Amino acid sequence: MKNFINIKDIPSIDLKKILKDAKKRKNKRKKLSTLETDKDQPLKGKLLIQMYEKASSRTRLSFHIAINQLGAGSITVKASELHLGKGGESLADTAKILSTYGDGFMLRTDSDKKIDDFSKNLNIPIINLLSPSSHPCQVLSDVFTVEEIKKKPISKLNITWIGDSNNVLNSLIAASVKFKFKLNIGCPKSYRPPRFVMDWVKKNRRKINIFNDPKKAAKNADVIFSDKVVSLNDKVNKAKKIKDFKNFRISSSLIKYAKKDAIFLHCLPRGNEVSEDVFLGKKSRVWQQALNRVHVQKSILLYCFEKLR
Image 1 (tube, one colour):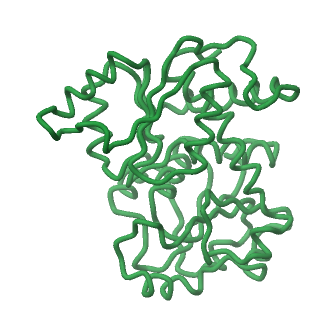
Image 2 (cartoon, rainbow, N blue to C red; image 1 turned 90 degrees about the vertical axis):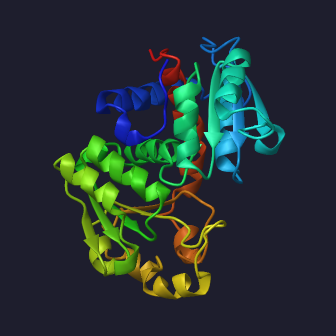
């Protein structure tokens, strides 16, 4: 069994195998309806236990579909319904119970430590559905989408992120090291990626370009990524943060600095960090991006169960 927690901890060769498998599986589903299972039903008889401590739309729905298409079953439990270190039961004991009943555990949480603690005590694979420092399933799917649209390896493309330094960007930075693509980041000076992330990049002999001018970050980009500047659970002065990012809004005038055939991607939900005409315009591929979560997450599951073809 294998865990899927952080992109930085997974060998590049395995990440590429996941994407290769996802491409094959997506192609084979063209004539199948949403809940028809893949013909090989590789996870038939398996039970995946999901737990969401934070709100989720795309991750919850896409994994529900992915699990069904692989022939497995799933159950979603609420954190408030489990002991999780309370009521006399340790998290380690909860993990052992989950390992007894299920074949895999999937967690969306506001605690990186909780992911780590579960991984040390589970006897089944764990998948990080989102944590404060990482959103690996989202970003690996984004790499898939970029290569699908551009029809070339992402290593040959210029990728730009304009916006806040958050868990999605952390995973995108990790992906830039694993897949060896050029990454420009546009953000205000006080919102640069954390030191531990940049130290890891340096340790792996890669370089990330950070600009305080969004126009410079967008120049010659093949792909422009963004995310919501103020997240639902942000414990910051939201009015100040919005003001700090006012010059980093992705508008039609800003996107002109990218290549003519550049595309725009956003993990959603969106805020005012992108203009309506860009988000709903011809360069936007956000709906294709969201749908591809299903296909890549199926292959992530197969990776965890060591069933990649």
